[in-house]
Length: 269
Ligand code: SF4
Ligand code: SF4
View 1 (cartoon, rainbow, N blue to C red):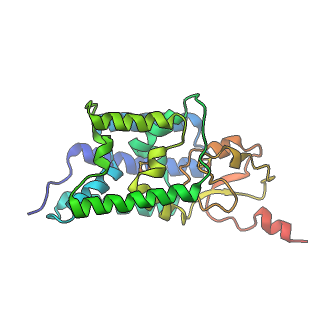
View 2 (view 1 turned 135 degrees about the horizontal axis):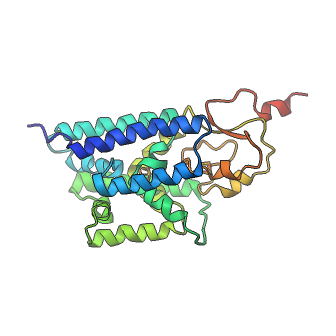
View 3 (view 1 turned 90 degrees about the horizontal axis):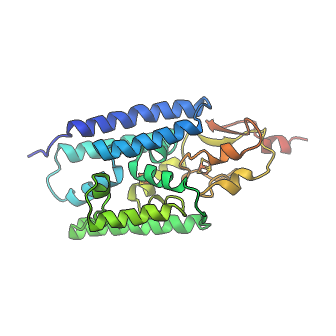
């Protein structure tokens, strides 16, 4: 027997995410994605998360894992297709979903914007490895023992304002985000692990042009250590800090592969 179909609020959430994904990508591509747009979008996403439970892909992923041994109904197939669409979009355009459309990511991004001391974690590979291990744990606990590891984080309770033990756990993760950039995304989120793989091969991403003067200011400000010339950008959340900090107009752009970059020019006598 097929499971229940998506309800109206879920459909609104998905429509919202798709529309703003393409609007965001267009604004990035044309260089019109400003700081005010960023915070407006983040705020709307957090509020929509409260009001409509907009697409919570991590939560959907956990549901998928928990029910995979069960009857695969329409809702699960729909969730799987929806996820695949966003993974494909990450492959084409980078992690706009994580950057601005996931309420879990948005609430951490807003917390990190608070004027608090920041601690940048230098171990990029180590963090990805931990998240990979958590990914395996989520799969094993869900498939083998029907345990929802993400359930301990009270994500739903937080966005629905249900005060539970899980609510407090997720609140603690947000409190940590005041000092460390997106700890839940970078250490726990199972779909973050998948997004990283797709986004590292993204067709459009932030790239340096030949205008770059190698001052490395972008690298110093990037909270995920992804602003280096050769970094794949798998953990780039399109926060925009590198572009804001760059002293040379046009040295960093969002788009496809650049043919004649500085390195090529340096090699030319
Ligand atoms: S990494 Fe996971 S929690 Fe973070 S923004 Fe992406 S989907 Fe959301
Ligand atoms: S500073 Fe730049 S490279 Fe680093 S995460 Fe933000 S947008 Fe991506």
